[in-house]
Image (cartoon, rainbow, N blue to C red; front, side):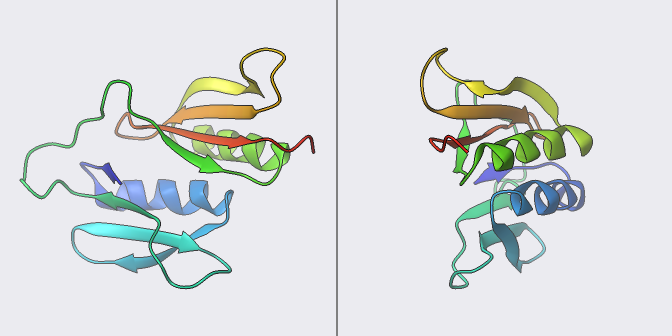
Length: 123
């Protein structure tokens, strides 16, 4: 779960971003939107939400939400989609650490939350 100060803008951002890793919107109300697997049961795996205490949403320093991807192409698409929809690059797609087998990309969302897509696939 990540907080937002503008649920409508964040919903548009995450609808596009999470589509790249196989998630779709499956729930919403006036304070949150939930996402689950496109092909799985209607179970929420990730939420964007307005803070329950009414205070502004802030991101955690050192906090990161990561999404497992099936291929490097999905990781690349996740990153490109995030940037195209107003996110900020926090790390281009690539192997981390250098020479390792895991392929990552990092984006900051519209509220500064750090989100990552990664895969161990060589494809």
